[in-house]
Length: 329
Image: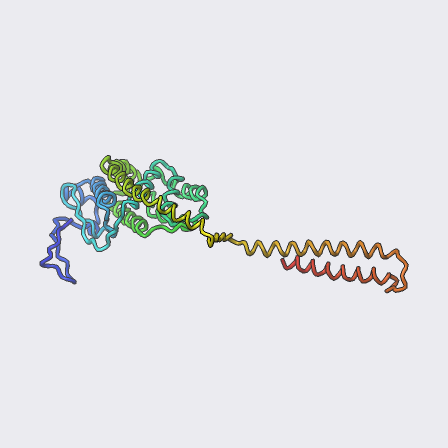
């Protein structure tokens, strides 16, 4: 990485150390890498990927726009990187999640990969993790074993984030920037070595990265942080429990329970109860009108005893009303 000459740098001009090399974008013939710079194309991309992995997982920041114009080829298998105008930064949680994702890919453990997306996104109880994992497997599994000529790693990453979005998972910005930087590196690999197995090499580096993440010193620091946070929690717990018990035992204490969609359930229940009540009334009217039909009476309507006729009419009206209410429901 070239040094910046700050005395010669202004808001409009960035002056950096000169690099004795050539940007990859200006190389039309790959043989120039070997003939003029005494370098191996596969070795160059291997060094570039190792440098990138170090930026992401050790330094915590990485070049976010690593296209061929910013990638210089130097003699004797050396590279130079310029234009750090776009830089991605990763905290420990994001770094750990990316390591776990890559390890899940190396073992083709799509359920674990799905859970990493779930853990990074805001909580949602509507995610079907099993279905999410199956969809990830469907788009990723066919690419294993293919070389860079036949694989589109950027497409894999974008497709996986699209699948996550379809399942209601919001992909963090830093993870999307990481995916975009992988796409830039993919274009470098396509230009340097068409047959370099990008995905396989990247996955082989995961174990080295994981070892760095789980060193005893780092684990001890994490354990120390957990102990300090637990100590604060334990010391505050009795006081919080005491306040909660005082609140519960207060004579003015009221507990409110909110049931989601309860109002809709209440309306449905009342409508069903009303229809049931009308059914009972209609049945009673029909039975009583039929019993009165055989009784002699002086009041007849169209040859039907008057009371029976009135009962049948009321039952018919209530029946039509019930049918209309059921149709609207």
